[in-house]
Amino acid sequence: MPKPSAIEVVAETETNQADNSRRRFLNRMAQLTAGGVGGIIANQVNASTPGSVEYAVPKDPTKVQGREPSLDKGYGTRSQFETETRLHLSAPNKQVSVSFTPLENSRGIITPSGLHFERHYAGIPTIDPNEHQLFIYGLVDSPQKFSIDALKRFPSQTRTHFIECSGNSYSEWRKPTKQSVQETHGLTSCSEWTGVLLSTVLKELGVKKNASWMLAQGRDASSLIRSIPIEKVWDDAMLVYAQNGEAIRPEQGYPLRLLLPGFEGNTNVKWLHSLKFTDQPMLSRWETSHYSDLYEDGKSRLFSLTMDAKSVITFPSAGMHLDKTGFYEITGLAWTGQGRVKSVEVSVDDGKTWQKAMLQTPLLPNCHTRFRLPWEWNGELAVIQSRCIDETGYVQPTVTQLIAERGLNSFYHQNGIQSWVIDKDGYVSNTHRT
Amino acid sequence: MTTKINAHGVLLMLMFFPLSGLSADNNGYNFGKKLSEPDIRKIDTTVMSNGQGLPAGSGSYIVGKELYLKKCAACHGVKLEGVAGAGNALIGGRNSLSSNKPKKTVESYWPKAPILFDYLKRAMPFDAPGSLTNSEVYAISAYILGESNVIDAKTVLDAKSLTDINMPNKDGFFVWPRPGAEKQENTVKK
Image (cartoon, each protein chain N blue to C red):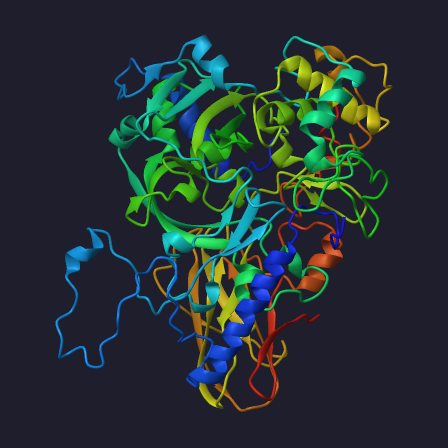
């Protein structure tokens, strides 16, 4: 098979590659014609931009009545001028696939629900919430099932958390591979989630003392299942039914998702169907064949569940063009599954010196954190980097440090420092630094 | 085996476990409905890596070969070599895991045979997940493991014989809660 390595199933099809290069070409064309600061923001109007409706543009909107608001039938769309979309890759087919969040133009910390990254093992199921039930059984005193309406009656909680696929940045172990932050880091997204703390529901059933793991199963056609340590279950696990103020999107698990703040994305089981309490982990396909980290000696680490500190500069980033020297605001995202981000340091001189970036408050645990640093570009070649330090004192490692510890084959949990190089003509690309 | 017991986790366990005997009858919200055994059986096909949960039934290599060619080969290849854009390779790659081109397959990577049963039963074949009978799953498992040279082509698989299989990579996994913490070697052993 013509895969670069057999480490994992993520492989681009020819079609995807063609789509990517077409997209880059369009971006480049937009850069050439837009002429504005950071000209990657495409100004082209695309009649088929997803999530928008195409309307005629009047010469002077102050001289004609606008359209009737009720034309949207009560649910709004975004501007027809906005072109941001998720980038889908078959891995290895159209159902078993992945999509990346366009981080390059992200603002603040929230990912729009329609742009949240996806990883699917059997496509997106269509589930009627009125007949969906959550089954809780195994080592419990009273096995029970709950309808979605029943779960919504419990006291609720709203919390803002990132979810990151542990395969995020998988392409960046050996060499700088992808030429956009969407493709290098777009498997992390952040939402406001609402639901009920799992501990609240479990007190209803009585979990037996010998229950040390919980098997969470989804209701897609793969019946995806993961073993969750009981400590996490009692700590901060949630059953969530809402995302960013409305029902969870189908591709994010409608009508019910398990949320495990700071744990690798795959354990946040979508279309949640059952929770089985056991005295051992299952060692399912998704925690052995997949989502285990292969070390240099050929042995693999199981249950590397917590996402370690990571950050990336989203502007400027690969594929962009700075067409003038002078002031730019460097900005990016930092996050950690170990609680809060303590600080973010940015280097604009290839790692020789590091400056503290400003962090946008409030600083929330297990949540994207926006950082910013004012910067004057003098027109010389520049390598820019960011590193996250979390509240445990953990410092985001360099890629070289990661490789020294784990070798080149672990695929998952690549949280190394990302470097972007800006050439003298202002073009930004992906680079590796020691 | 646990991944992470930090002070916080222990504290939480101490806080909550005394409450864990509380049933829905004791001032609970009572929003749930009692689950019956048949209810559970309908959705629970879970097989643990130690074979717990394996159902009755049995299957042979020769029956499995026929089923495989009919239901699996289109995506995983007539020789189980995988098909680009469809399904992964299932065999090969033994001793490749410490090379610079590791090939992860059922043969080279999967630590326990019951996991194969579990996955085939819940998720395969791709165009009709969950449609295989238990004996069909045993048979297809026998064919895949036979082609992997893990078992003899004459071995008939059932709950006991599948559990007894020594997979080539059975000692290839460890749990390491966090770099710096103590490694726990070979936790997948029986």
